[in-house]
Amino acid sequence: MRPMKQAIYSSRTADKFVVRLPDGMRERIADVARQHHRSMNSEIIARLEQSMLQEGALDDELDTRLDSPELSLHERELLQRFRQLSRRQQNALVALIAHDAEMAAGNDD
View 1 (cartoon, rainbow, N blue to C red):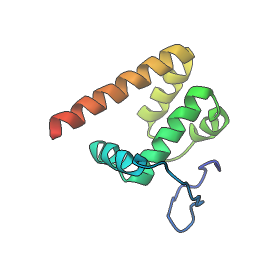
View 2 (view 1 turned 90 degrees about the vertical axis):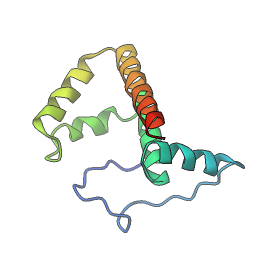
View 3 (view 1 turned 180 degrees about the vertical axis):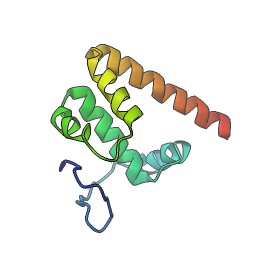
View 4 (view 1 turned 135 degrees about the vertical axis):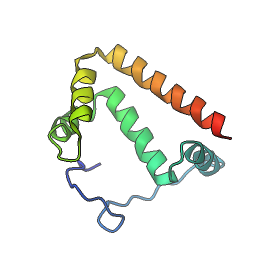
């Protein structure tokens, strides 16, 4: 996965990769994406990024993102504070936010 340093992301300039999914997975991804009000592509990318963050595989990429002009002052502060947490605390916070988002999405149905 290439670092996302570009300010503008477009489907024409993005890397493309074909994935073969097991039976039924496409439908499950579509259902979850709808619950999160995302496209299937956005859902897959969000989950891959989260998984890689938990493994520490995206730490270098995140260092460059902190200086991104796309981040607001509040987003930079949140990101800095998040990085000060232990890995266990980061995972717990992300799980809590994901659970809260799922509960909110469930209330919309």
